[in-house]
Image (cartoon, rainbow, N blue to C red; front, side, top):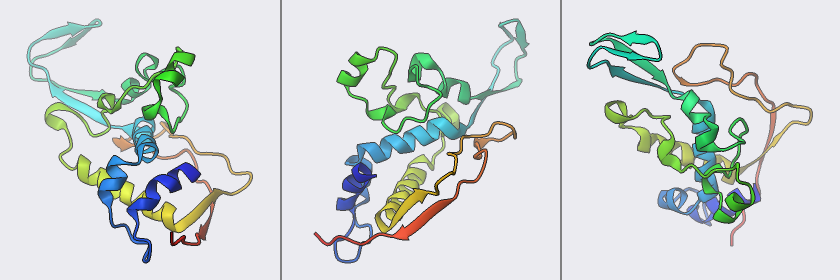
Length: 188
C-alpha cells in the first residue's frame, strides 16, 4: 500500500485532496496499472465471437461456414507459456517485472498488456475500454487516497468463482469483510 500511495499522491490536489491529474495515474503509476491489468487477467470472462468463413475441421470438430463461434479468453489468460509458472496466483507486479527478476526465475514472465483480451479484440474490441480504465483507475485511486482499507482478521481472500456462467467478469467466490477508515491527509 505504501508504494501505491506514493505513486498516486501527486495526482491529487494538496489542499482539497481531489483528483486533478488523471494523466499521472495513467502514465506514472506502474504498480497501480499493473494491478489493474492483473485484475482484468484474473477475473475476465470475456468471450470473443467470430463467424466461420468456410467449413473447417479443427481438433476433430467441424465448423460450418456461417456458424458463430464463441471463444472464452480465460484459457489464454491462464496460459503459463504467456503468463509464467505463477499463472494461477494473483501477482500485483506481473506486468512490471524487471529483467533482473525474470533472469533470476526462468519460470516467470512479463507478458505485457497486449496479450490481455478482457475487452475483446478485433472487430469486437470494446470502444469504451479507455473510458472504463480512466473511471476504474481514478475511482480506485480516489478511494485509496481517502481511506485506509484492511481485510478484517480471519477473513479469507476471495478468488473468482467459475461455478456460475457469466460473460464479462467472474464474481468473487465469497464476500470479504474489510475495515475502512478515513486517512489523515498529508499536505506536503
